[in-house]
Length: 218
Image (tube, rainbow, N blue to C red):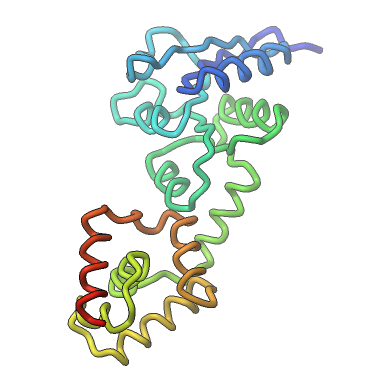
């Protein structure tokens, strides 16, 4: 039997093509009332209308998770941001669901229904990222500092100079970083760190400074 009550869904996604596609896909299922909210002004919906679930892009979703948001406990983030750092940050802010672009309509509809029922909903790829994060050995602050310098392309000698540590100490830290990231070399370690969103890319000024340091040590 078709349910008489339709779940009210606001689509607060900045990409107009994604918004339109979501509206059409959910509207065709019969148990959703969907409203597309234009975000051209850069402001999230104000919560004046009763809504069961809000489907939002990453940045809009985080704004809707603010302490004064009337929809704080109804946000489903739908995004291509798949780094562990992004996912964990959204979870810490209180998102009820997190799906990645490319999931099926059935997955999206199921997630919306779960959130409406007071549950949480994380896609299988997101759940996999969370599981990896839980079981992975953490980097220390010193190792994160050295990883940042690896990302900037500094040699062990340059890192030792920058951190005022002994060269052998730096080599030990680098080996430990490789082990914790399950990386075979610097290139792979940097790629893994960037994929996981562990550290910022680094400013152009930092890159220029790193280049100058490499030159001075050669």
